[in-house]
Image 1 (cartoon, rainbow, N blue to C red):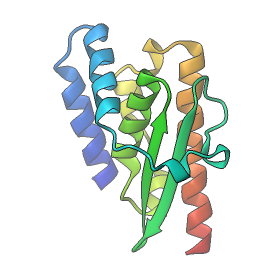
Image 2 (image 1 turned 90 degrees about the vertical axis):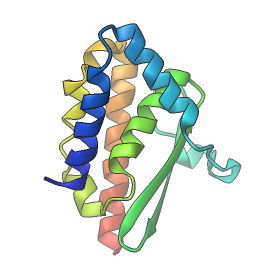
Image 3 (image 1 turned 45 degrees about the vertical axis):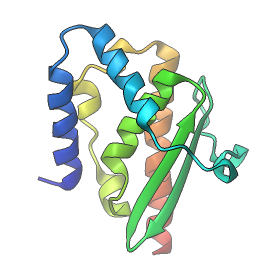
Length: 140
């Protein structure tokens, strides 16, 4: 099992503690609140993820063959969603990120409980993260 799968399984287990979706939303919001603040210099248009209803900034840095992502959003739910994605995909290699099957999204029921615009935003976030990984992979 890959490190990405291990983290996804941890998240699935955490979400199994909650019976109601309102509790899961609260948990996602809490994850967003715990996300380290994005440095102001990275809150630029070039770091905005297109296709998201709210504004989501994503920054990536490559160090020792691993990509570290930092992000922020102006919407609490969206900030929690990007926090989940960063938790799964940050500190992994570009190869691992680009090949990752993000099954936790369906297993916790996230996509089906989001509005269509948020669901589209989630897809945009995943696509952007994978595109960055593919781009960085080709340079290293």
